[in-house]
Image 1 (spheres, helix red, strand yellow):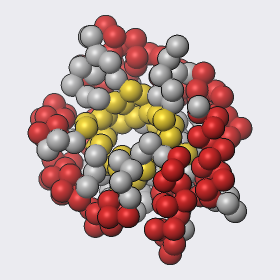
Image 2 (cartoon, helix red, strand yellow):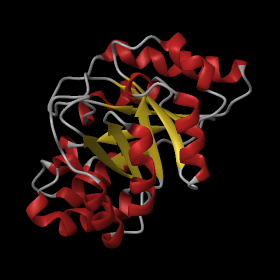
Image 3 (cartoon, one colour):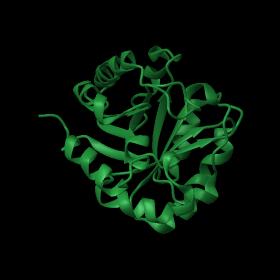
Image 4 (tube, helix red, strand yellow):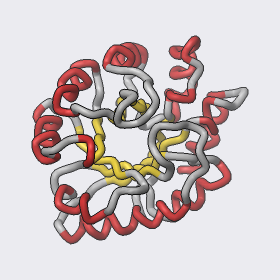
Length: 219
């Protein structure tokens, strides 16, 4: 049997005026908390930086999974590590020396990962699969919430795992973008290890019950 899928609620969809309460509501069902960091340049939107990561780290002991959609990644990894990030993923095209950034993240005792957008080619990812702990497959274009999942992106999960096996790497594949109760079976059938879920949890009337429902489906 394969590994049981893990849940990473995306707090981008949370009510930030009640952030502590919302985090506590999903905490019992969360393997990670997913934080989308956007700088307004790599993607059009701006979200938050290390200060919010630090605030979340003080609220919960759930590991923090930061997805960096930013330029100048080498300049920021230490700040996010010090703020409390447990995992940092970044995009191949966001920096020039991908390998050095991966090494820098690991040297900070943080788990390194790479993110691939729909327009990225998987052959660009392959040279680094033996260096990272996980790959984040975007099933929407990064930078905007509320998009419909692109189901054709789920085929990438198996391809990435096969490419990793060829280089002797055992990595986790995370899927983020448009994941809902209605398409969760597709996501799991693709072999996904970590599922990022946003609105299907935080936009429900009972956030705790919604997280429990998703976690039960993953189990």
